Length: 176
Image 1: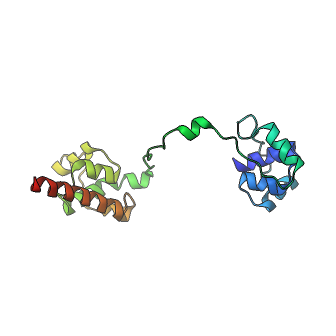
Image 2: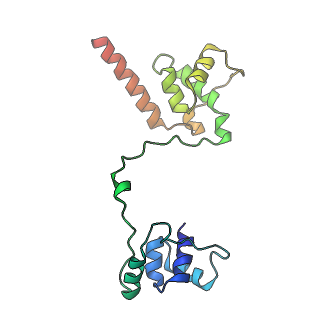
Image 3: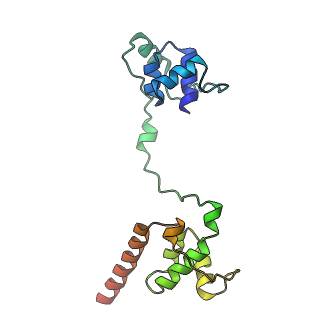
């Protein structure tokens, strides 16, 4: 909430527009527009002290020296946390209807190379859905197939990785 933070800093401190713009990641003219009441009209300020972004001492230090930059409070707990795992991406409703067609396309093109779990991962579907389409027991008849790359469900790079992984796994099984 950079604009809301900027509003609070403008209203409650004597920091320069440059200091506020650098801290909030806004352009200096945008901060000036907020101060003039032309930008973010009716928006409430967001207190960075109550929300543990800044300390009162940090604000006072920067008010005394107009060339100083505001520094966020560093958290030892947050810095020590392991990196987050990749979240599942949101699939819009229009793309969700395309999933069975993309699954059928992958099954037709790579019947033995890709496992059901790999297809499910590429299309963001479930293994049961892939199995149902593969067996022909899916609740709706899926007659046409569409490329998952064209519909935006996965990239060619993702498909290539999955194919290489399954091919190398099969090569390892053959050599053993």
